[in-house]
Amino acid sequence: MDERTTGWIFVGAQGVLLVALVLVPRQHHWPTPTWVDVLSVVLGVAGLAVAVSAALRLGSALTPTPVPSATGRLTTDGLYRYVRHPIYSGVLLVVVGLVLRSGSVAGVVVGAAVVVFFVFKARWEETRLTRRYPEYAAYAAHTGRFVPTPWRQRSR
Image (cartoon, rainbow, N blue to C red; front, side):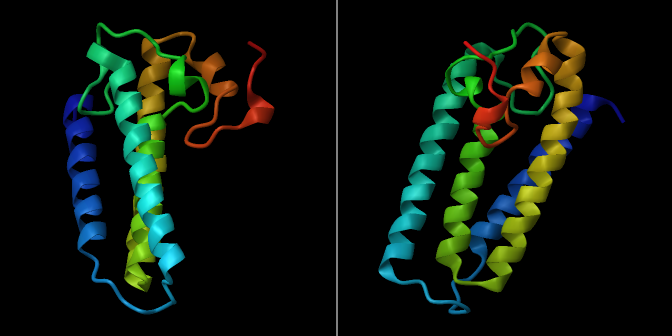
């Protein structure tokens, strides 16, 4: 199977997982006081802002699949200065917000599946980024995948 097809399979699987998470019925397996509901909304809004900001930063290099653009350049500034996959980071913030709000064991299970999925998707994408951009390995060595890692940051 070629990498474009695999990339679209990743997109489809991601869509299924995210829709499943949104559709998990709200339960009462743990208390969800008002502050948890507020926190979940804050995380969701922050996650959307991070994802949209990172997508806009890529400009014409943004692709719908995890296959790097043939004409793009490696982006290492803006949010990409802190994490290698800020769009995924933003989506994962939304996922945490949805899981908190769900009050549901099923929400936790689907949320965990989404996190595992993004780890695999990012690793797959990073293999292609390393092939496309020779400087990617050095960038990755100093930049966290989804969460900023200040102890790994290179001096700037």
